[in-house]
Image 1 (cartoon, rainbow, N blue to C red):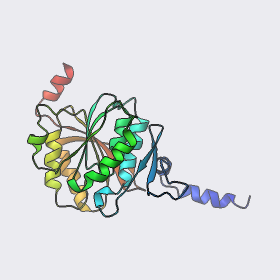
Image 2 (cartoon, rainbow, N blue to C red):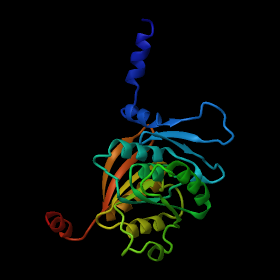
Image 3 (tube, rainbow, N blue to C red):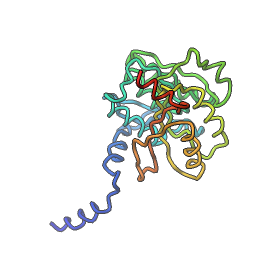
Image 4 (tube, rainbow, N blue to C red):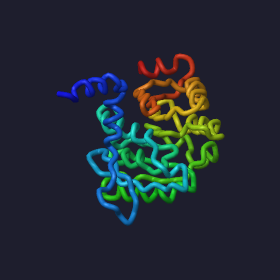
Length: 245
């Protein structure tokens, strides 16, 4: 009885996104015993996923935006059915999004910078071998470089582009924008989770919106993360005529 007022006060102070944010963060677990190899655990697609991080490389650390995107995919499988779909991930990092997309049935191309690929390959193979219909492909992609040579538009058609925490205060936002535009056709659906930190993130969203239709799917102020759905804009009335056809 004495604890009731305290509970009520805590309830009033709960953030509006607390329930969703809590459900997302509960996907993470740590091993109960100390192991010879350090790893972080996650539960998606009804399976345990073990992720090895590399603290000496910024891109090889798992950030909460990846968990937000994976939670959305896992809980919206009817709306966003990935079975047999061609998916590319930008800035795959530790590989969690790639792994979850693969477990959900997608044909995934997982990309990142050369110094990240070793750890990325390890995590992807460890968690998808014998579990997936399609083996994920892990390959280098430096934003803005050799895009047509390595990802020709004529043969590389993607149903989905996944991106988690690719926008932050780095000097390659122009190259990232160029990469988005090259890899996406008018039919490609982008699912993009982003943690807002500084003004460059806000400015990039404005710039991105000039070329892509942007819809907010999640707003998680307690995590400073938003999840967007986007598709490339087409000129004139082309989009309406194609939809009618």
